[in-house]
Length: 114
Image (cartoon, rainbow, N blue to C red; front, side, top):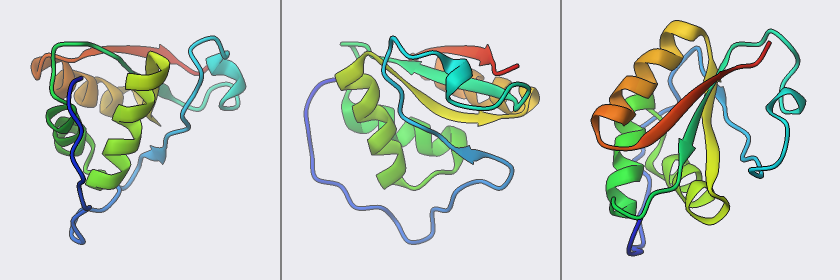
């Protein structure tokens, strides 16, 4: 993820219903410690050096419906810490979000929280 630009979140971009705003985690922290057991699936974004930072944030918006500001925070966490949780949600939604991000060329994994 290269380059930095000042961005502003659009007022009409809202958090998608049914998703939990994601915690930003350190790469060595246990995912089980972030949520109680059995609370869905974590969509985890890994850093890469191939995609533009704004592109990654825009793709997160497309996949999740999050604000651009929130997407930028998720992207920056992955950029600086190696990976970050995009969201924790049910399996079907996690697979959908993961598919959009992977189709866009991002490195993503799913982890069950239970």
